[in-house]
Each structure stands twice: as C-alpha cells, then as structure tokens.
Amino acid sequence: MTYLRISVTDRCNLRCVYCRAVKAFTPLKHTDILSYEECLKAITAATPLGIKKVRLTGGEPLFRRGFTGFVSSVCRIPALEDVAVTTNGVFLKKMAAPLYEAGLRRINVSLDTLLRSRYIEITGRDHFDDVWEGLQAAEAVGFAPIKLNVVVMRGVNVDEVARFAELSFERAYHIRFIECMPFDRTSRWFAERYVPSDRIRALLESRGPLKPVDRSDIDGPAERFRYEGAKGEIGLISPISHHMCSSCNRLRLTADGRLRPCLFSNVEVNIKRAMRKGASREELQALFRAAIQAKPKGHRLGVDGGFESERCMSAIGG
Image (tube, rainbow, N blue to C red):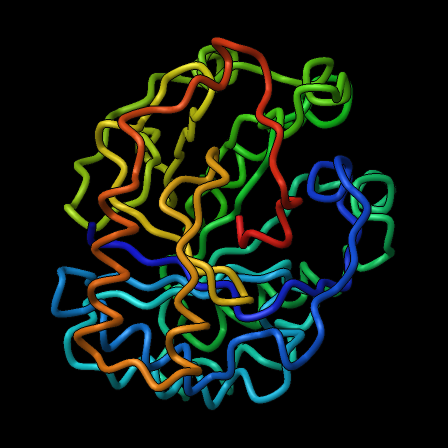
C-alpha cells in the first residue's frame, strides 16, 4: 500500500446525481470529524509502512475552513513523494494561488460536462463558470498536471466524450474517464446509466489512435494514453468492467476516522477512537496493518450486481 486518500469533510456545496443518489445524507457533527492534527498524526504513522502518496478529498475539501494551512503541513512531510487534492473546482479561482503557495502542485477537478445547462442538471447548482475560471486560475499559477475527472453516464454525458478528448489537444489536461459505479443493489439508476470503458475507449479511438503512457508505482488506477500531438493525456478508470483489485495500492481514511481498505466493502477500522484515547504511533500502525490485512482480494461489482454501501460516496471520500 503506497497511496492514502483522506477525506477532510463529508460536506459538499454540490448535489451531484451519482454521489447522493443512493441514500439520505446527514452531515457529521463537527466533533465527529477528524481534526487536521489527527489527520497529520495518521499520515506520519502511515509513511513508515510505505505510504508515499496522499490525496486530500471530501465531500468538497476546499469547503473546510483552514484547508490551505493543512495542505502546507502535509506538503512538508518529507516521506511523501506526491500530494494532491480532488475538488469540484467551485472555490478554485480564489484558492488556486494560496494552495500553490502552500506547496501543492497537483490537483484533480471533477467536471462531468462542458455544457453549462447540463452542469446544472448534474450538480443541482449553477457553478459551471466558477469551475472553468478556477481551472484557468490553476493553470496560471502553475499547477501541473491538472486532471479532470469525468464520470461517463448513458443518457447524460456520453455524447461529450469526444469533446473532452479534443480538450486534451487544446490544453495540457489529463482527462480521466470513469465508469459510473452501481453503489446500491436496489438502485436501477446506475444500471441504466452505466457505460463500460471499452465503449468509452471506442469513442475515443474514433478521434485517433491512443498511445499508451507508462505508469509509475504511485499512480492511481487509470490506464493512461495520449493522442499523437496532444498537449494532455487520456485516462480510463474501469472498476466495473476491468477489475483493478490485484494492482490496487490504496487505503481510504473517512472524515470520521475510519480506515476503509476497499471502496466496495463495508469493512472499516476505527482509528479515530484510538487516537482520541492517546494511541501511540506504534498502536496506530498496528491499526493500519489490520486495515491492510482486511483488504479483500477483489470485489464482485458487476458480477453480482451492485454494492449495498452503508455510506454514500461523499461520506466515504470517493
């Protein structure tokens, strides 16, 4: 395990259809959320065990007060080779420069459409212009690479795959196309909108051949490609059609302090309780090892239907 995703909040200013389509959402109480100091304690316990990459997520991480200062502290941890943030981009215009000054260099922005009217339908909010201006602000201050996360959905945005691909010629963005994940056995919503990555790849190859890009040992799950002459990259993330479990290198830490070894498993290890009882670094490392040992060999999503999660996606951290 080299990759730790940390959710700093379960709150978000958007209401994206795939994130909160499954269960009613009740925000955590402030006292139930890990403090920044507790997050740092978790990271410094994990790095001697091999964690080299940290991604800060939410909810919407830029929504939490004091986030820039926390990013600065994380970026100063010597053992980390890579620190990144995933955001919906709404606050990025005003926060891009402070985050860059804090030491952050990599950012992912979730953006499922390039059409303003469709953005409102997907997110329930009218912030498309804010996100686009935020991307430009991030480019201007020097963020690289800037990744765009695109959840592809039948009947929603599959017709925009080619347009996003074209964007990789215009800008040095890394476009990540993600299969929509059925996060509840009883929900037909996901099944009706699921698009396999092979279909996405076929749409992409209608634009031209895709050349594979080499991966590093701390990369996420994306298969990476590039068009000849393009400034940016294309990535495919295929949790349903092409299980990536054998190469999964990640753990997730939820905002309320649970280590989750697999997105598609309800198994969790409570490290917040231990920290608040004064656990030593060695005791925390034992809990990290327990979470790693609990990581399943694989999930059965797409084999046995959906996955009945006890949490919605925003409460897990994506």
